[in-house]
Amino acid sequence: MKPRVRLHIDFRLDFRRLPDDLVERGAEEWIAELREGVDQAMRLLTRFPAAGTRMDKRGKVELRRLIFPKGPYVAWYVVNGRDLWLIRLFHARQRRPRAKLRRRYR
Image (cartoon, rainbow, N blue to C red):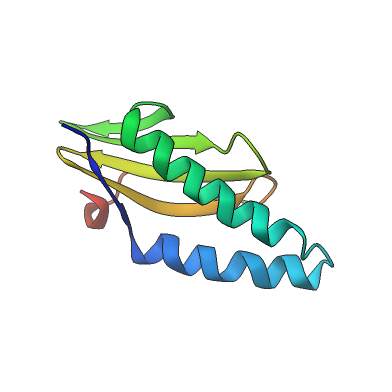
């Protein structure tokens, strides 16, 4: 059974902030690539939930990282049974917090 890909509020907030940062840096043309990258990631993860690199695991819940095939972006996601949650979105050069499963993602 294919997992449902859902967008966590933290991912949605990251997705809203990144285009603002791109506009500030004069890289507006990357906004369309960001959107297409998210769509591609969702399609890929629907078919292959384990496509990303595992970063943490607690029981059957896994935190994974997916580097976008196109564009300099990284998504963190949690696989939890039938659901797959995209939880964070970063530019590849952006500082990221320590990768660890938090209660709110399990």
